[in-house]
Image (cartoon, rainbow, N blue to C red; front, side):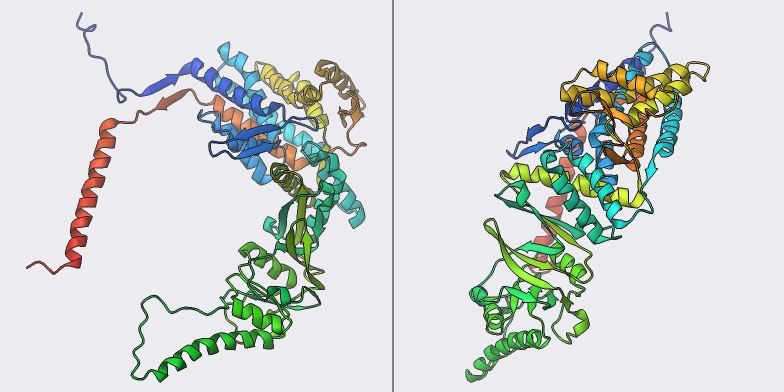
Length: 562
C-alpha cells in the first residue's frame, strides 16, 4: 500500500514536451520523407521548377535543390538536417543538391520497416556505414581520369560536365552555349580559388543568346556628375589608377572652429581647400593614368578636370569590382595620391564603355594577368535571370571541381545502378541481418534513375528492369548504362557525354548516409517550454538595468553630487 502512495518523480519542468522510442524515430523519418518529396520532382533534365514566394512578396522560381531547401521555412528539427546537407553539398561541390536530399530521404524510407519491426537503429547505422564505404570505393574504381590531356581536349571534356549540370536547369535549352562560356571563365581564372573573381552581371532584356563573356572585368556605369559625357569612352593600352579616396571638396567636420582676426584671412582658408583638391587631381594626372577608378565619390569638379585632360573617371565603384580590376590589370589600390609610381598602375589592352540593353557597361578586356572573367547575362524576366545565375554558379563549381579532381563518372543514373548492383552482390556474401540492411541501402540508390524516369514521364519499372539486366552482364560492359531521357530507353551515358565529376557522387553519398545515420540515432526529442516566470524575470532585469543606466546619465550631465 505504501509503495502505491509513493509520489511521482517529476524530473523536467512542467509543460516540457518529450517524445521517445520507436514512434519518435518513425515520426522523424516521415518528416524527412516529406521534405524529400518536395524536391523530388526537380531532379534531372525533365525536372519541374518550384515557385516560392515569401512573406515580403519576393518570388523565386528555382530548380536548384539547395535554393528550394533554404527558402522552405522548415521548423521540424530532424528535417532541418536535410537542409544542412543540401547547403553543404552546394558549398562544397555546387551541384547534386537535389540528389543528396533524395538519397537521404530514401535511405530513411528503406530503414523505416526495419525500425517498425523492432530492429535496433545501431545495427542499421553500422550496416549503412559499411555500405557507404563500399559504395565510395566503387565510385573511385569506376571513375575515369581526364589528366594528361591537351588543353583543347580538356576544354571539351569540361564542357561536357558543365552541360550535364545545366541540362537539368531552366537554361538547359542553351546548355552548349553556356557550357563553353563557363569553361572559358574558369580556365581564365586559372588556379585561383576565389570564386568572386568570376563576376556575373545581370541585364534584363534581349535573349539568353545575347549573354556574353568578357575576358576581364565589366561593371555597370556608376553614378556620374556633369562633365562625364565629355570624357573619352575608349582607350587602347591605358594606364589604370585605382584609388580608395574621395576626390571632392570636403566640408569641415561639423563643429570645426576657426577664429579670424581679419576678414581678408577668410579667403586664404577657402583657397587652401581648393588647393588641396587641385593638388590631388594634379598628382593623378601626372601619374600618366588614363582611367581613374575610385571606391569613394569623385565629385563634379574632379570629373570636369579629368574631362578637360582626356581622362576617364568613375567613382563609387563597388568593392568587389575594384578588387577584380586590380587582380586583372595588375594594379594596386591606393589610399593616397602621393608617390604614385608606375608599379602601382594597372593596364589592359582595351578599355571601353559599351551599351548593353538599357545599361552602360565599363569593360576592361585583354588584361595581362587575366585572372578574372565576367559573364554578362541577358534574359526576359528578372526571375529568369536570377535562376540563370544560380544555374551558372552550379556549373562553375562543377567545372572547378572537375579541373581539380580530374576524374569523372557516368551520369544519368548509371553510376547509381552500378553501385546498387555491386552492393546487392556484396550483401549475398554476408551472413546475418546486415545482409538485409545493405540490400535496402542498394535499393535506395535506385531512387535516382527511378526519379529521372518519373520526372520525364517514362515507365520507371520498365526502364529500371532494362538497366538491371544491362548492369548484371558478367563482362561489366553495362556499367556505364543509364537512363536515356530523350527516348525513354537506356543508353551508354559515357559515350553520350552525360558525365559528372566523381567528387559530386562521393560527397552526395557521404552526406546522405551521414544524415540518415544521424536521424536514425535519435531516439528522444525534448522540447523545453518557454517559462513565463523566466521571461518575466528577464524583462524585470532589463527594466532595472535601464533605470540604473538612466540614473548615471542624468548625474553625468549635471553637477556632481555633494
